[in-house]
Image 1 (cartoon, rainbow, N blue to C red):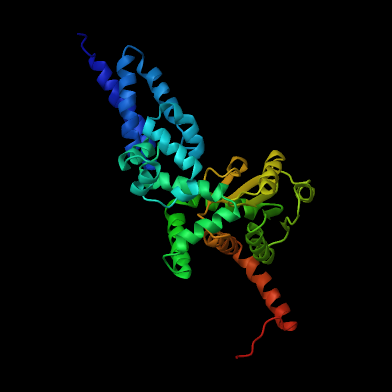
Image 2: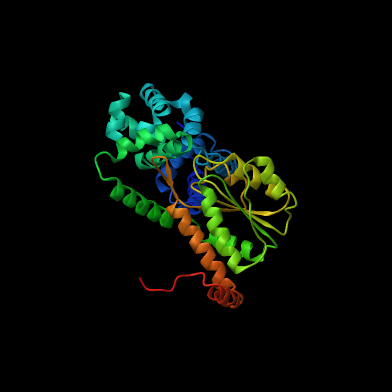
Length: 354
């Protein structure tokens, strides 16, 4: 029986310590423990290799994980590794994601004909940190893929036991908490603010329901500075006509939420290809617009019958307007004083007490 070289253990500690230091901030400790076990086997089998060669292998393995993929993509990529029960569960989720999205692990297992433990193991097999994260991934698929009829059916099941008003208010409050805890990155937010502040021209685009967010943002930004352009068009060709001369000194803000607008994605891609700085306001890092964004602002959203809940992105819009106003305080005060005089002169607002 071969004895393990002492150097092997030293290298193991060094390699895992270096990787763990990188991953600690990502709060992926449990997944790292699984990864560590699998990698220990790799290290043992290749203990005669130089430790840095093995480190590169491990680093490459971790970087090639499936965290950037959505649920359906993960299922497709991992399908060859599934047990019989996991294949049955994967098929059920794929075909009934609108139902599975709000089931507990126990109920999901019962509906799919597998045990609750199979559901939990399935989540880990897909590199999620347990069932709650898998459930959120299913809900993302619902938001992205469900049509309005499916949404209506889903909401009737979701709200029939509770009152609609309080259920939606509680859901919005929960999404705000999610956005605060794991949504908008403050560094990304501050970088976006600086890009907008330094831009020669700011283009803002939101299609369909997101058009109202774009309009509100544009309305307030026009009070604060010049050269704000709200891209308003009914087709991709008309949209591109409005931004055809965008360049490296400009900034393009694209706002899109499930179901994601192809027009907004295409416009942000065009802007990036022409050298402009790009900002995306969307609901998660798997959103198709993320690929073309220099700055990514994540604000959670939810499906409310045929209504898209945009409470969180609206809060982010409010924060951006406020941040720019504070950054340009003296200039903004002058502009607002001039506007107040104008509003008073033309009696814009009703001052009578009813």
